[in-house]
Amino acid sequence: MKKLIVFTSLIFALLAESPELNKVEIQNNKLNVNGTEYFIKGICYDPVPIGKTKRNFSTIDKDLLLMQEAGINTIRVYSPIDELAILNKIDKAGIKVITSFGYNQNGYYDILSGTYIDYINKYKDHNAILLWELGNEYNYHPEWFNMNIDNWYLTMNNAAKKIKQIDKNHPVSTAHGEIPNKKAREMVSNIDMWGINVYRWDDPTPVIEEWEKVSDLPLYFSEIGSDSYMTKDYNEFKKGINEDAQAAANHNIIKNVFRMKDRLTGLVIFQFVDGLWKAGNPEKQDIGGWAPNSIGVPYDGSPNEEFWGIVDINRNKKKTFEVIKKFFNN
Image 1 (tube, rainbow, N blue to C red):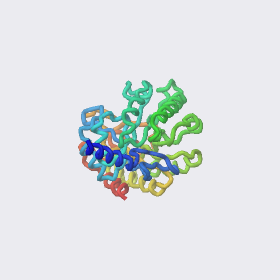
Image 2: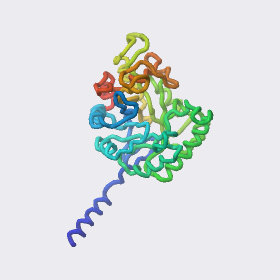
Image 3: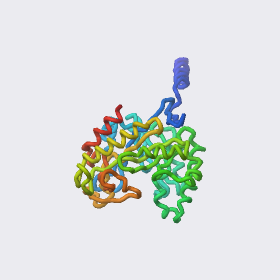
Image 4: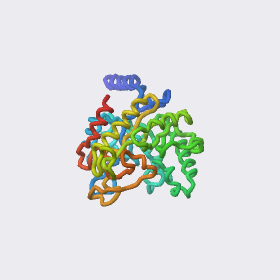
């Protein structure tokens, strides 16, 4: 009995001396994780296998090794990961997760059903969680909200308030298409920081200065990047599959952002793996696809939705992988 008491006392002593885990704060407009400043070097991650239309994590081990090699410290997912084993693997790899909640995801931890709160209660103490993110450029889709986007901003603000009532350890953000206008910013007063999806050729940094003129809140680029297919010739980049164009675009984008990295909280490249399900037959890679406000995609003004990966569907590295690896590991 005496040994048990001593052992139990030792455990409590160690716990008392250990720092609080998974405390994410905003300090001086920067993210701070467990007392250390954290700059997001992220990648959007939606691993849908060839021939499928829904994601699964069958390649998670290989994917995480590639992410570690590339210096990626954060993955951004478009719907919550409800597999503890997957979150544990992500955490073990030293990577954090930006978890996005959709408005209407047929009841899968979405805002409309209110089940997003269930997810937060379930995983708010998991060390992999970095941010809670509400919606993904919904401002381009007023048709989802009775043709009045104000309905979304009100819903988002209420959701952010509820999250902060139950989780004091993680900021709440959103991913907005371009800079939100004054009305939107005022309506969403409970948001702690803003993610902005930006496609302005190969230099998104004017957004930083534009943002600083209208808001004091922290900013991160929740989507930036380029694809590896050219719909037309542009300078030295020829029409067709063109990894050189993607690599050059991402090089310039990241270089420009890193020059101003002291004025934002990070960037997320779109995306990790090619999405063969997006523009046609999921069994093969199709040309085409369209996204709102995407005419600024370098270097052809066209998103070509199935060609955005830094690796292809078989996890072969594209030329842009080495570009990202060079920047993210420095």
